[in-house]
Amino acid sequence: MHRSNVNLLSRFITVTSFFAFVFLGSMAHAQEEHELEKAFYKEYTFLQKEKKALENRLKTLQAENKKAKRDLKEELEQYQQSAFEAEMEIEHLNEKIVTIDKEALAKESSQTVFEATLDQANATLHPDGSDKADSIEQVIQESLALLNKNASITSAEGSFYLQDGTQVSGEIVHLGGIARFGLTDSIIGPLAPAGGGEFMLWKEAKAPSNIKDLASGQMPETLELFIFDSPTKEVQVVEEKDIYTTIDSGGIIAWIIVTLGVIATLLAIFRGMFLFNLGKVSSETVSEISNNIQAGKLEDAKTLAEGCNGSVKRVLTSTLNNIKRDREHVEDAISEAILHEHTALDRFHSLIMVIAAISPLLGLLGTVTGMIETFDVITEFGTGDPKLLSGGISIALVTTELGLIVAIPVLVVGTILGSWSNKIKDTLEKSALHIVNQYQNTQGR
Image (cartoon, rainbow, N blue to C red; front, side, top):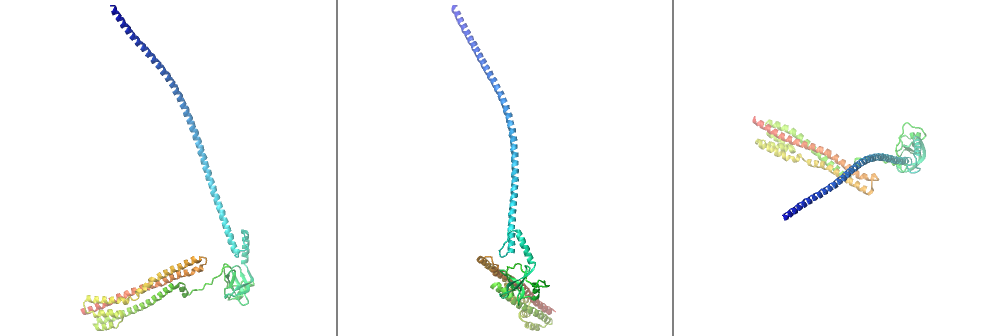
C-alpha cells in the first residue's frame, strides 16, 4: 500500500513535472515570440519611416531633376539662339568677304584696263617709245593735240625714197595723219610708208598741180592719194599672180596635176570626136542599108556596109553576112560583133576616169607635203614671220585647188563620154536587129 502510494506520487510528480516543463516551455516560447514580434514591429516601423523618408527624398530629387531639365532646356535654347545668331553673323561676314573680293577684283581689272589703255595710247602717240604719258589727263591732252595736227594740212622739208630706192630731199606735205605727198623740182606724187618712219614714192601724180595747191593751203576738188593707217608699218606691194606663178607656187605636185589635166583633156577631145563621127555615120548608113534591104538589094546593102569604117563596118558586115541564117544564130553573131567593139568604143575611158580619181589624191598629197614643210619651218624659225610659212601653205592650198579643178570636169566629161559610148552600143545593136527584122519581113511577103 505504502509502495503503491509512492509509485502514484512518483507518477504524479513526473506528470506534474512534464506539464510544468511543457508550460514553462510554452511560456518561454510565447515570450520569445513576443520578443520576436516586438522586434519585427520595431524593424517594420523603422522601415516605414525609411520608406517615407526615401519617398520624400525621391520627390525632392524628381522636383530638382525637373527644375534642372527646365533650366538645361532654357540654357540649350539660349545656346541655339546664340549659334543661329553666330551663323547669321558668319554668313554676313562671308558676304562682306565676297563683296570685298569682287571689289578688289574689279579694282585690279580696272587697274589692268587702265594700264593697257595707257600702254596702247602711248604706243599710238609715241611709237618710238619716248616721252610716254603717265596719266590719262596727259594722254587726253596729247590726243587732242594729235587730233588738231591730223585735222590740218602742214608741210615741212624732208626726204623720201623713189621707187628705185634712191633717197631724195624735198617738201613733204602732211594731209592730217592719213596721207603724205612728196614734192621735188622734178617729181611730185603721193607717198607710202616704207618702214622705220620712212616714206617712199607710191607713184607720180597725174595732176601735180592739185598737190601744189594742197601745199599752198588750198583744198583741190580731186586729189590722188595713198591712205595709210600707220606711218611706221611698211606697205607691201603685192604683185598680181598669173597662172604660171600660181601653179609654180604649188611645187612639182601641182605641175603633175596640171599635166594629167592636159592629158585627160586631149584624151576626152579625141574620144569625143571619135564617138561623134561614129554616131553620125551609123545613123546615115543604117538608113540606106535598111532601104536596100526593103528593096531586096542585099548585095548593095553589103557594099554600103563595107564602105563604112570602124565599129559600124564590122557590126553591120557581120549582121549582113549572117542574115540568111536562123534568128538565134544571127542574134549571137550580132552580140559577138558588138562585144568585139567594146574595146574600140571604150578606148581611153579607163585612163580618163583614173586621172579623175587620182587628181584629188595628188592634191591631198600636196596638202600633206605643204603642211609638213610649214611645220618644219615653224619648228626651226617659229611663227614670228608669216612670210616663212607662205611656201608650205601655198603648196597645201594650190595643190588641193588644182586637184579639184582637174578632177571635177574630167569626172563629168568622162561620165558623159561613157554614157555616150553605151548609147552608141545600144544604137548599133538596135540597128543590126532592125536590119534583121527588115530582111525577115521582106522574105515573109
